[in-house]
Image (cartoon, rainbow, N blue to C red; front, side, top):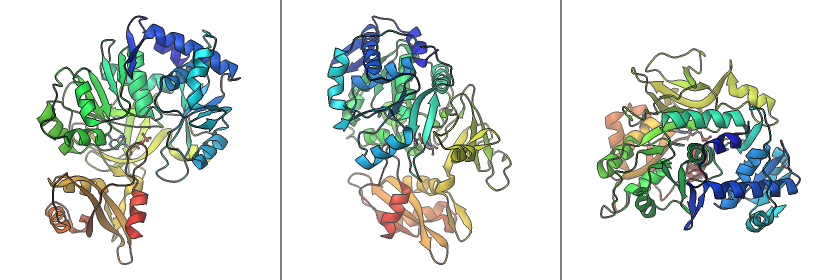
Length: 476
Ligand code: AMP
C-alpha cells in the first residue's frame, strides 16, 4: 500500500485540509487536486521509481505533486528554494532525477506548475507498492562533508508518522499551525504528514513571523517549531500576548532547545514545550512524554517501535546511566541507506544500529539528554569539552540571547574554546563577565578563552548554526 493510500484512509471529504492565503481546501478538494497532479506526472513520463526534483516556494502545487508522487511511487526530492545552480546541478547528477521542477528553470518552472496542474486530466489510479519502495530522497544537511541522499521508504514514512500519531495524540479535530519549511523532514513528514494522517486541518503561514504566529496559535491546537521560533516569540515586547489555552501541543526539534526558553515560554504563555529528537535518516526517535513531565533540556524516551542505545566511542560498549555515549538507533523510521553510496551506508551502521553522531546521556529515570555531536567535540589539552555544556551556562546570563561555542586551533592546547554571543535586545554585556560566569560553573579547561559579540551566526536552511563556518570566520 502506498503511503498516500494510508493517508487517504482517514480523510473526511468535507473536513478542512489546508488553509493558505485565505483559501481553505477540504479533503475532497485536495483529493481532486492530487488526482490532477497524478495526471500531470504521468504526462511528464514519470512512473514508479523515477525521481522528481521539486523546488518551489511554499505552494499548494508542491503538496499536490508530492502527494501524487507518493500515490504513483514516484520519488520526491524536495529542495530548498535558496539552493544555488551549482548545488542543484549536484543534486540532479547525484540523484539521477528524471524530471526537475525548479524555481525559474528546470524541465518545468515552478512558476508555471500551478497552471500546468490545473490543465491536467485527473487520474485516480492506485498503484500497489511494497513498503520498501522509496518515497523521498532527502539530502542530509551537509553541515559536514558531501551531502548524501537519504532514501526514505514508504515504510519509513508510515513508521515515523504512526509512532507520533499515537504518542502525540493526533486527532481529526486538531488544527496545525505550520510555519516550517516543506523541503525538510521536520516540516514535511513530522508536521504535514502527521496532520494529514490524522485527517486534521493545517494552516500554513507564508513564513514564520512571531507576532502573526502568536495570533494564529490562539486558534490552533498544535504548533511545531525549531528553537529559533520560540526564541523570536519570546523576544516580542511583553505587551504582545495571546491566549494559548486552546493549544494542546507545542513541539521543538532540529536543534537543542535551551532550558531557559522552555521556562520562559511556560512563564509567559503557560505552555510546556515538548522537545523531541530526530534526524533525516531515522525520523523522530526520542520524545518527551505527552502526559507527564516534559523535561527541559531533555529529549525524553524512545518512541513506540524505536530503540536507542548509547555507545562509548572508544570501547564500542554500551555506557551506563549518566555516562556520555553516541546515540545509536533501530526502528521503523531508519532508512535502508544512502543513494548509491554503499560504503557510506555501511559506515553509518554499527551491528545493525544507525550511528547518529550525536552524544547523549541518560538520567537515572530514563530521560535522555543530548550533550553534543561527536563531530562537535572540542579537545583542548587532551581533555574533551562538549560545547553544548558551555553554551547552556552562558545562556543563563540574562544579556545573552544565543551562543555558539567552537574550538579554534591552538598551538599549545590543540584547540581553544571560544564563544560567539548574540546579545538580547537592548542588553549590554562585556565578554569578561561571560568568561567569569563560565568559571563559576565549569572546570577551567572548559571555559571560553575569548568571547565575541556578533549580530548572527552562519546558519543552514533549518536555522542550525554552522560551526565550521563560524570557526573559519573567527580565524579569518
Ligand atoms: P536533520 O537530519 O537535518 O534533521 O538533523 C538531525 C540532527 O539535528 C541530529 O543528528 C541532531 O544533531 C540535531 N537535533 C535534532 N533534534 C535535536 C534536539 N532536540 N536537540 C539537539 N539536537 C537535535
